[in-house]
Image (cartoon, rainbow, N blue to C red; front, side, top):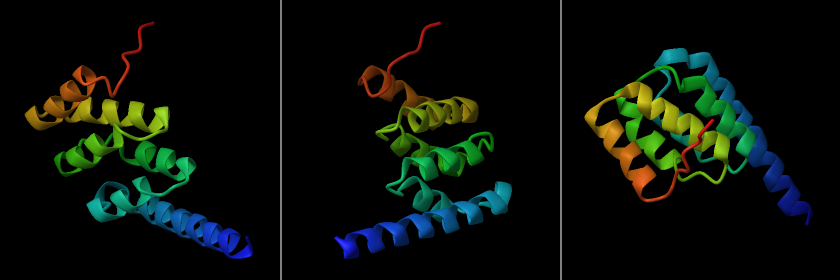
Amino acid sequence: MENLETEQRRVRELGFQKLNELESAGKDVSVELLLKCLSNPYQYIRIRAIESVKDYEREDFTIIYGVALNDKCDSVVAEAAAALAKINSDKALEILTNAFFEGDIEPVCN
């Protein structure tokens, strides 16, 4: 049990370290760093990561946002969908459209 708690603490601390790097990098953040943050098991880190980059409209993030559409956290999915819509490229819109038609994303009606 103690080893598990130690490992969880290590993963959480590493996640926050990578998140701080991501937030400090601004628009120059690497694809690899974003992927590490969005792969973290702690949803808080994934949410903060996608919130930090969602407005950058970087085409090289398209596939990562597409993968994030499958996240178990609704906030991450919503931010990924919004980011893909902002990129507005053929590939981004194809990924977003496919996710809606496959039922991965539930449309929100106000």
